[in-house]
Image 1 (cartoon, rainbow, N blue to C red):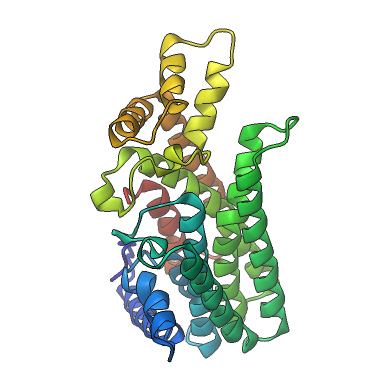
Image 2 (cartoon, helix red, strand yellow):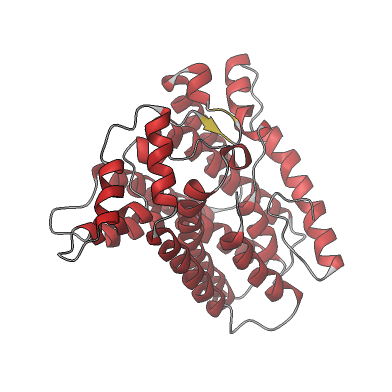
Length: 335
């Protein structure tokens, strides 16, 4: 199938259907970001043209196969979740000062922070216009998802309270900032294909757990993969002091009475001046080989397995197998 995820599908008919429908979603997505205003048009198309995994619309199309996946509403829902995701990327890159996104300069690097933020708002507006055609339940779910996205970003920005466990706080940030939209993607597919409420609930819980696993895998990828492959600058989160699980696990280890010399050495690198590329590369290299990275990977795998267990009540068949492969692919990927 023609997806950046290279999702392995044993059923050729299912693969062909998903490929065809994902092509239609891509066309509708490009139509949705088109503006008569030249600046708005260029800025809105920027990240769409840069490509991407399209995992959220793919998940919508996949869960829709549990019902009638050919419904027009399913395609509209797939466009909504990707538009929403793209909008958050414009905002995230401004807040994280990320110079690259999907191998291309971030929008704020091209047009400045204000234009990037307003472009994200424009995409949210287009997502809202599309979701309005799906009815009041869809509008409510989209609004609740948007609220969680904002809360996740807010809590990441402010950080944990003095009495709050930083790791527990971080996992909740991931649940809100990442998992909420992945859960909604799965939910919309089942919902708009006419599935029973219990099936909708099953795939929503699957998406919620998988979303956290996906982001933990990203934490590992940010340290272990080549920036030329991921399209992101390795260690950007470290430089901007944005928490990730490997760094938080390292801090927890370094705070223990039995902290090792290597724990303290790597933490000193992370807390040092990372403004220079050489210093950042040294910190990334040190953290990359530390055991906390493997611990993060294990947590991602465990959460993906927990997501797959949510699917147990579903009948066996190509769609269930594909959802299980989807979960495995998200945590095994290198970009």
